[in-house]
Length: 259
Ligand SMILES: NC(=O)c1ccc[n+]([C@@H]2O[C@H](COP(=O)([O-])OP(=O)(O)OC[C@H]3O[C@@H](n4cnc5c(N)ncnc54)[C@H](OP(=O)(O)O)[C@@H]3O)[C@@H](O)[C@H]2O)c1
Image (cartoon, rainbow, N blue to C red; front, side, top):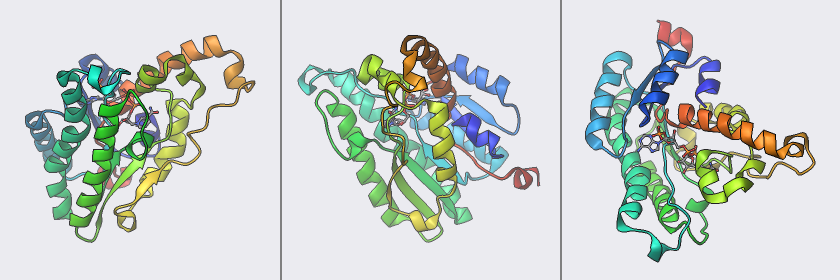
């Protein structure tokens, strides 16, 4: 997502917890882009981050609440209280932290879009992912209520991104994740869709179209499944860390930010 957003000429500000991968991102994409290592579950860390973002960039035009975690596959009664809390802390409280710290400046500029990443499991359920389902159903409710609070000019939407071969999908689908779309290909479809969102979309429960289907067996992608999966996975990991670590984006056309 990072690569695609920057490729389309926007300024991006992102975060993730992994310092090594944030440093990689910084090396790859210098000023005006900006990446910071922090944990969105900490309101204090998000507060410091937002202060430094406002100082250099002003309010974001588009916030992508993409960071998320999933529980290891297990029935609810076998999931520890700590693991349950961590999923809710990142997926729901983390999203709320980002909104709390960034939305006031967007309200002042009277424009901006917030996209809260939901899931198919925010609108349906399966066994062994109850904490994650609870968090994503929570995101759907939080987004609907927020949309009702926003004044004209702003929008909050929830987004089911589809099924993508990422580190998270590997955690719940295992090797079968390899038959789903790769992050870079997903970004080519999803980013233009995200960039078009505006006030008229407020409150919508959106889905990125055309990315949930498995890549067809016998197609080029699956023929060399082993090598493809291996190579694809490591590049997917890299993309995810680079991309999803970039949790909030400040997007401006280059000519505007240059001005
Ligand atoms: N992949 C799918 O098929 C799928 C389907 C439906 C919904 N989704 C949703 O799409 C979003 C992205 O998922 P993904 O598949 O790309 O997951 P992923 O591969 O696990 O990547 C998650 C990203 O979030 C960052 N992150 C996690 N916790 C964080 C925290 N506390 N603070 C800051 N950054 C944090 C991670 O970076 P660090 O580890 O460096 O922090 C990583 O870059 C999630 O909200 C997920 O629920 C994904």
